[in-house]
Amino acid sequence: MPATNEQLSKYEKIEAIVKGFKLPAAAYKRAMTLLNQELNNGLKSQKSNATVLSMFPTFVRSTPDGSEKGEFLALDLGGTNFRVLLVRLNGQEIDIQSKTYLIPQTIMLGTGTQLFDHIAECIGKFVAEHDLISHQLPLGFTFSFPCHQEGLAKAKLSHWTKGFRCEGVVGEDICQLLHEALKRRTNCKVEIVAVVNDAVGTLMSAAHGDRNCEIGIILGTGCNACYMERLDNVHTWNKEEKDFQPKQVIINTEWGAFGDNGCLDFMRTEFDREVDTFSVNPSKQTHEKMISGMYMGEIVRLVLERLTHDQLLFRSVDRECALFERGRFYTKYVSEIESDTDEFFRHTKQVLDDMQVENYTTEDCKIVKYVCTLVSARAAFLAAAGLSTLINRLNKQDMTIAVDGSLYRFHPRFHNLMCLKIKELVKPGLKFRLSLSHDGSGKGAALTAAVSLRLRNLKNVEENGFTQPEMVSVKA
Ligand code: BGC
Image 1: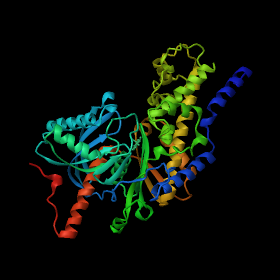
Image 2: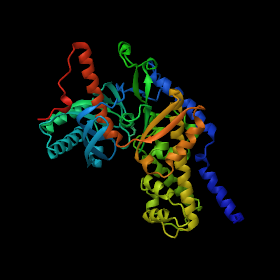
Image 3: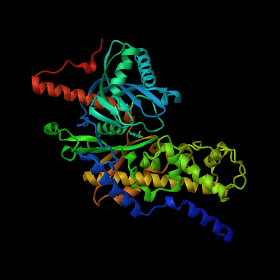
Image 4: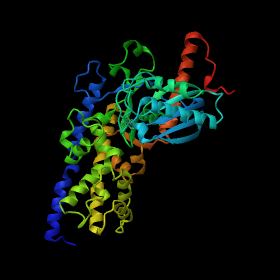
């Protein structure tokens, strides 16, 4: 049906508002060049003030070899939920039992002591419920925030992200805080063996069954990536330790902060700037705010608000309705809306009802869906550009990338959009596979703890000719 003049000018006006989300390939290539420079800057020993990527060496230097065994506790803290897991490893066989506990907002914004006491109490209950009080349990802790690691079980929080702001934790060793809380609140016999970022856990979990996996990425509430780097390139790594095998270490890039020095401003829209201004951490996590689930819904909401205000969407709408409330348009709505494939717009209508929008037309539904597709495609393409930078950097013929996170899991097109863009951006001939890592955070933390104990035993055998008693599987 040919568009009338009135419609044409309406569509032109809509296009003018959303055009910032339709970026040419050259913009993504420019982002790749910039990201690569930032990755290199972050690995330098002398960092300038403009260095934004933390590039934390994680002290995880080996991926699992499949022989890991034993009984482990794992913790997963990084969003509104906190999980405690009991992981039993026996080669490729893994048995996981877990329980999820809520972290109330009052605790997310309270004191560090309250947070760690709450965590310790949950662990205490879990251990009692599973009749494990007398077990000596090694623990792997997935803590999904930027931490400067000084050892596998020594990690100082650099800053909070994703809406957390507990007082008295920044600059502190989170293992120590957990250890003290466990002593205060429980009588469990737990040894904290490893603390890992969720991207690292995801990589470790996938690498357990796939030796080609050297990159892990999280696309959830937050966004981050890690990869296996050669020690020679890591100038922040202690020289003496460079002689130890293997000559590699997983780097937690903390690429959510990419762009915090303004280098991504050329691709940000007025809506990105507004999301940033009203966030709990303005001017921080620029890249993350353009990609991840914590912000995507709000970007869409701001565009819809603007279109409504300019009378390009929804003829009559109550100014008091939820659509005009900050933070009320969840990213899961974007996934639901984009899963509508016919002219009935079942999910879109459901969301608009939730948003208390009345009297919408089918054309309104089309426009709402269009906005969602543009915002999510930019996020997927930007994540793909980041991944392509890492794939090109590692330059391996065949590469598996472990992916986890609610955005990637539940958005109907994210995976396909990413694959499409990566194919366009990686060096010709490099093959890649995006593989969903199941329970990366829980299984990954337990595996990291297991690998560390395996290597600890190996070192003892090399140095002293004995194996430590197998504390990984002591049962009373
Ligand atoms: C944190 C990362 C984390 C990512 C995904 C970001 O906000 O800084 O450490 O890996 O979220 O959870």
